[in-house]
Length: 337
Ligand code: HPA
Ligand code: ZN
Image (cartoon, rainbow, N blue to C red; front, side):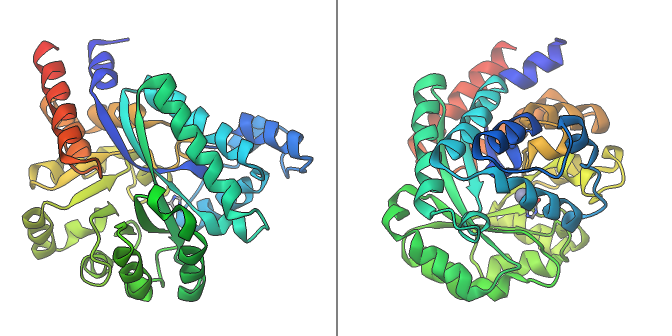
């Protein structure tokens, strides 16, 4: 391990943009398929990995939803999340805010309770095993209807005190934030924070829509905001956190190469950009791999990397005292490095 590797791994960081279904490694996919008697359309793990060549978001989503079909029981969701937490802890993640897509599972007849209870038990175990904290972001699939999202919010009723936020993911183009303004208002009334994917493939107007129609606390991705200078100024003035996902951007062709990734431009502009893995099993790397990839491709300094980690702590939904304690830990680490 080089010094820079050790610095990146050792930085106390939060992961704020992670779809738990996107952490399903092919090996676990096969193990769960066997456990649940489900036939997979792949001969072996290598064939699964070979299928992970995407030219856009929708290409990926089709394969991602198909892979999630092996997840049936609360034990499956628990095992999925534990595998992620073990890897996150090894990457220096001290806090994770993980998205889950209930509609992907309830549409297949999996009860909401199985999904959430499996994830909650993994969060408790991860805290005991690794000392990391985690919370849940319930994401609505934007290609489905407003009514379907409302039904999901209703179904989540008994667990709302254990859900930190609602999110908005899946196919962005053609599904602007405004479609979910009323659902997000209802979620906010119930005390939930709000995040939304915006500006991954969608235009800057979708980022504006996430601010004005959904009143989000964070923007997931946000890359295309850079096309609108006034919007960048607005995001800077708001202190809005962007959860940027470099390897995802590469694999989904949001950027042609990591050499062109805008993370350093974002940081220089004063945007509160963070570095995250999105769907690590599909995009070839966990959070530290994402830090390393942009450090190399864009020549980020240790100061830049520490700023991204600091942004992840201050942009988290942890209480202020916990954020202050983690920032002190980060400062001590950087001073000693
Ligand atoms: N974008 C939109 N939806 C998603 C993503 C993403 O990057 N990953 C999982 N669902
Ligand atoms: Zn995402």
